[in-house]
Length: 285
Image (cartoon, rainbow, N blue to C red; front, side, top):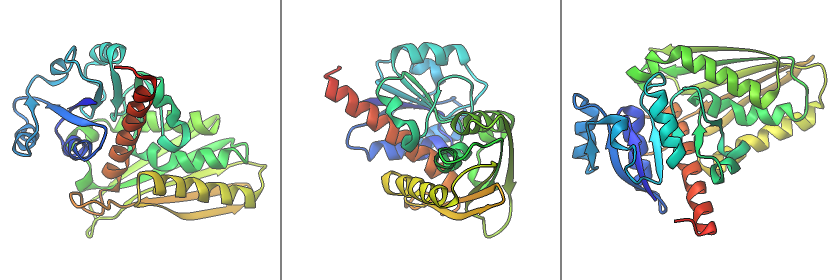
């Protein structure tokens, strides 16, 4: 299927290369601003490019569009895209069905607008959703830490949106009425791996069943699309559940600390491939 990537930053360039390695997708265009050094780099990597941003892909006959640009940009154009193609939004923007491949990835077969919400939600939602099936959370708190070098300028501008959409994802998949999200960018050297830690408060639940469920959920992510995904902590004491996930990048292009980039991009490709498989099965052109 013909795809386009909007936003040739750290996220978008890695995504374009991942798409080019897919057996069911092809990256037909990388779109950005004329002044973007990333756009010039995409051209050097051999991708067709356009300086017209989202305007370049509207009505362009693409089967799938990946948006890695800016959460606050072009909300009306995003809605227009979602009406005619599959829009996979990797920015923390409002709109679209919040989706994580191993939790509700079946939505890729039918929905036209998928939101990955944030790299933090992609890290913590699989294990939180599994935990919530075995308890009734009354409060959820999530803290994410990423290496400064793994977060591009658009992502830094969107930190408020990141917190909001990560909170919305946690609320959706846990049912917790109270949710708090904190995030930190670390300049430490050596750069730390991407980490997401969640705390749930719940008065009920079977500790053994809960522990087994989150272990299985982590294994599903690791085995299906993100080999660097690890559940490194699961503590259950007196109604307090603490889950820790570390994600390292395992590919050749990204440094190991950029697990946040690898995770959300691998999730986006996995969902797009699922969409492509469903369309092939239906015989949809």
